[in-house]
Amino acid sequence: MSSFDYDLFVIGAGSGGVRAARLAAQTGARVAIAEEYRVGGTCVIRGCVPKKFMVYASEFPEEIALAQGYGWTAELGAFDWARFKATKDAEISRLSGIYAANLAKAGVQLINARAQFVDSHTLELPSQGRRLTAAKILIATGGRPVVPTALPGHEHGLTSNEVFHLEQAPKSILVIGGGYIAIEFACVFKGLGVETTLAYRGPKLLRGFDEEVREHVTEAVVENGLHLRLNAEPMGIEKTEAGLVCHFAHGEDLTVEAVLFATGRAPYVEGLGLEHAGVALTPKGAIAVDAFSRTSTPHIFAVGDVTDRINLTPVAIREAAAFAATEFQHRPTRFDHLDVASAVFSQPEVATVGLSEEEAVERFGEIEIFVTRFRPMKSLFAGKPDRVLMKLVVQKATNKVVGCHMVGPGAAEIIQMAAIAVKAGLTKRDWDETCAVHPTMAEEFVTLKDARPWRSETKA
Image 1 (cartoon, helix red, strand yellow):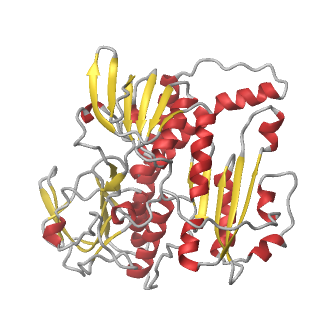
Image 2 (tube, one colour):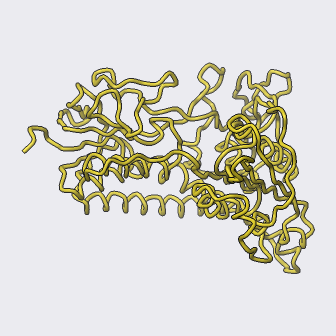
Image 3 (cartoon, rainbow, N blue to C red):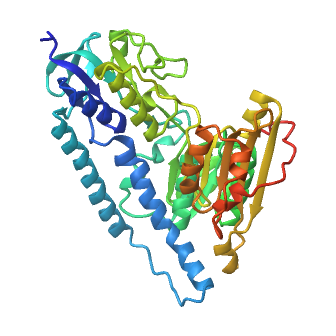
């Protein structure tokens, strides 16, 4: 019998921490997990799940407009924020309860408290006034929103943590940021009837994505009625009787009822006492780990957003499963971080897997690009100006499809299946030999025939 209180102690009961704890406990290990807030983590409590409910709610005005274009006498009533919030909160509580119940079924002890290191094997629970020890420790504390504290008046703004708890929708909102969280929330509030402005200090949205995708999305959100300010640097936020006044570097002020900061996320490592356990951080402040999620202290591990590898819930779950297989099932396992698909639930939707055109040129030199832009059948009939972008990036020497990108309705659903082909290393010939399903948007991916030259320079 081990001299430690637990064989495994997990800090953080989000998707990654819960998965690791359950799998380890199922091997007979003595496992405990500590959570300072609510079981379920960012994804379930204040991220993917509640945000997707908001996305769904915000899409109905467009569906009503499409229905009218198809001959329906349809009208959109007022949006009842309070009713939506109550239903959303009840569903989040239900899901959190399921996570807690599954931990209990697996034999994991759930501790509702913050845990911090005393030394590499000892953890303290300050709120409970006690200490405990563990042979192995897994850190799965995720990330937190970054607030630009150097910005005067930043205390008047919201983050993605607080936005889900608003008692009523603001009449107007300024979303500051240009990444996927910023564009998602901007599109949500715009769809819910809120006068919405998205301000970003750069020239195009979604930095890090394929340049052609960035251009397409930037143009599309403006066409859909979102107020967009690019190259706009906030200089301060002032609270006045008229509302919150945001001052920009270019001199044009904007007065709104609410300001939402979507200026990135950072690994949540504050207050963990990592220095007492010898756990090293990367230059960007994430917990440094190897391919097996092991930190600089051999018996301490970390998975998920706190490691800042790929900050996606399914990735955290896979990293956690690999950790449990390695450490408790005697099956050394690494999660392969290559070709992980992702989606941005903006309007229009964005989905991608593999390399961008710019990344492929840098890696392979010789590539081929296959692109199509078209008006989708559903909205075309209703007289809508929407346009879909679909793109394949092909390594010329091997004919392998190394990147797949889409902007348009159902992009996330389509990219999930396309990711299988990209991950498997299928060639463009394999895609071409796959018979189309007609009439669909997805068929365009298997009917792309003419390559175009790749761009010679990466645009800023």
